[in-house]
Image (cartoon, rainbow, N blue to C red):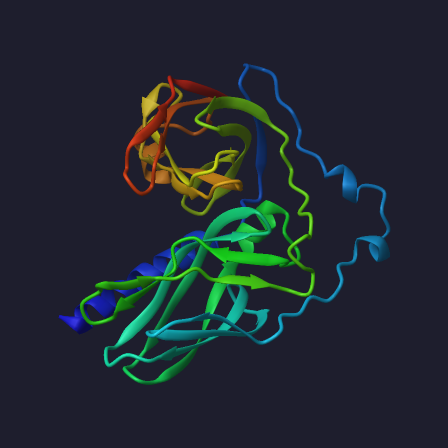
Length: 304
């Protein structure tokens, strides 16, 4: 049974890597809440009319530091380096228990932007293991992040790798030489679709992806609590299609959310060109799963 679970996890990891590392599509189309009205998303004003020397980022380093320590584990950040899927944060995990464990997590906050990451480090009972927390290149580029200033885990936890029982939730914080006060520039352009429960949803662009199409939404959580945002009742050109968006947005952060439209669903309904997308959004408490807000039908027109 243990081997079966590990095979399942490996398969899921490969799927996540393919989804997160597919890169932005070659074509981007602006979107609008009004038909025949589109707004082009340009370069942030801060980077316009600057020479390469002025926009060149300084070298950023991470000092080796113990970032978590209790009776179960000690976690040390060792540094960072570019990996084949993104930026790898190198971690040393020491298992102080007599159980086989894993350090696991799915979401992180980077420079104030919530995004998916990959963290799964197996450590045998009483042993140490070097592993990585990976920040995907595609997610960093979409957010406009070219330098890591600070990072916080959203859902990191220690699990028994045999039974998958959660043994402890851990809060990881990593600060680089840029410092916690670094101000990340964010592109908030687009059209406001919905606002409720301290959350704003802004429509940005439509992109082509290897699995279909993606409507990029900018979600800003101005509240004091984490929220999950979910898209429901999704239709394209009047046809209900296979689609998905379910993302955590930490308190006081933003997230660039992908509303993914699967190619199979578009083909089944004979959709070659997307003219309009309609959907609703539900804002959920990720801990109690209570609904905090529910929108009516939202409509987005795709620029041609």
